Amino acid sequence: MNLQKEISLTKPELVSTLLIFVLILVAVMSSRLTRLTSSSSIEFEEEIEIILSENSSLSDLQSQLDKKSIEYDKEEVDWAARLLGWRNLQRGRYVFEGNYSYNGFLSKMARGIQDPVSTVILPGITQQRLAESVSKNLNFSSEDLEEVLKDSLFLVEKELSEEELFGRMLPETYLVYWTSSPKEFVSKVLRAFNESITDEFRAKAKERGITINEVVTMASIVEWEAYNQDEKSTISGLYWNRLDRRMRLQADPTVNFALGERRRLLFEDYQVDHPFNTYINSGLPPGPITNPSLSTIEATLYPEDHEFLYMVANPVGGHVFTKTFQEHQVESEKWRIWLREQYRIKRKREAQQQAQEKETR
Image (cartoon, rainbow, N blue to C red; front, side, top):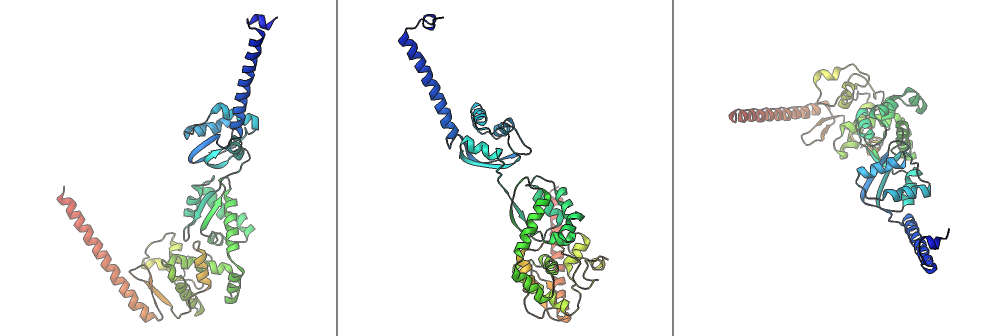
């Protein structure tokens, strides 16, 4: 067959046509290769988060891009993924912002190069609140985390009781991978605690004749007792003074822990039969009642030197410290008078509000 005759072209015309076709093909390929290596092949105008809950395909990724209204060329992404070999993506959390080449964009997920989640542990919280807070941003449930904190085999491995482990959940901001397991998370926090307890801290505890467990236990009580940062060392000094004199701690936070809730205590609450109740049991409780901050641990190890043995709350959120029981009784009465006045004001305000609501009916 004569191609030139079939398409009715002269030889120069045929050469020209083929040349144009080759040039177009080269231009297309050159454009695609340029797009392949370009640092702006795909653009994210603002930070976006892509979470792959399991190992995923390219179509799974494209579904997420579509849901987030990201503009991209689907055919070009398919072509780039085939050419580069990045079609199987690993589960994880990935953050993108700005411009990316196809290789940079796809290889990050194909190689599982995750972006960590910023996770905050607050001081003085409960085990349940910790689990709920942390699990919101990671790939496990609050129940899974609580299970690890109570896991007898894990506790034996770490040579800690349940309360001692939770007391070491050091308040801090942690960078954690979304795919981390509950056990990996707890182990990471435990390592951070151990690294934070310096040789100086350990030497100070030894000097006082106490263990790190006892330090954390005392610090946990101070954490719940001290609303003001400036009072921490004063409160720890007071509690150490009481122990040194073989007095019961009589720390309200231990009663709150025994009751399982933080509220204003009633007279009968102080008699609750519980090993953590320091009104009826001598010495420190069996373990920490919460997770103290590093500053509270330091204040516990380096208490203020004074002779205070008693304290009572004051109207401004702090405490009045006294040396004798007689002085304590005087200050306690002042506190009770102030509380009664607050209740009177509250009842009066509620009565006025109810009267106004009746008038408007």
